[in-house]
Image 1 (cartoon, rainbow, N blue to C red):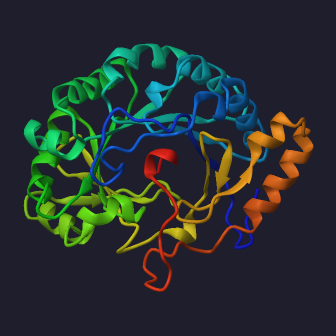
Image 2: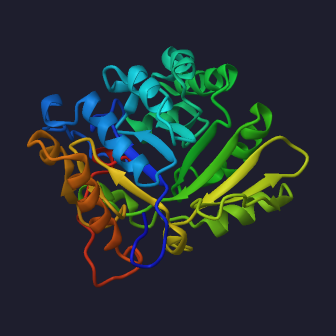
Length: 326
């Protein structure tokens, strides 16, 4: 499956639920409540059916996201069915880690390959201020349990926020080295004006983060996947790696190989593009697999060349991140 710029689509990110048990300042507005009922979201059978259609069109990697995907009823069974699907080469999960310790072993047995865990700070009080919940220890225990059961490599995602956690960049690398993890530093990107108020004067670039790390460690380039959004480095003398995801200072649209399926059955061909194509309605109205394949091909073919985050003339008002999964 190709788009009009010749990029081959091999990666599907599926938001399995639009609810979350945290209220991170850069992601979900305080007090936000999803108004969508579970019967308005894709059923587990529909998730698997649509995944199969995308795999038939060339997708080889699937990532389950949210909201918080571990809030989805029956998720281990969905994992089992996706992992058994011919053509799926990698099945991953992005989670905030709150429920991970409880579910890691079952997910591994079901066929999940690896996890990414959000952890923006190593200070429990600061964690509570960022997320609205005092459960830092629970998240750390969850990611360590994931490593123990073999959901590796465990990747820790840290959103950089000037004046909030930019003093923890090197300590986070030290944490990754101690526990044999990969930490990925992510620039805070705009989503919707409802949550972007605190972002003013908080942007911290990955170039600044890399400079801070290189004062303490030598980074060895290790970009194994040309389509990966992260510029990846091995931390010399350790078993840790670091990655830099820079959607603003060094965006990577030219190599993007992914599309996104929302929990409500709509797809987005660009994280920052318009919401497109209601596949849930097509399924429920009895559309054939062939008809869905044809319209997915057409929609993906027309996806934009790049996002517009660095264009001041385009207003960004599209989504709350928990409804899409990043």
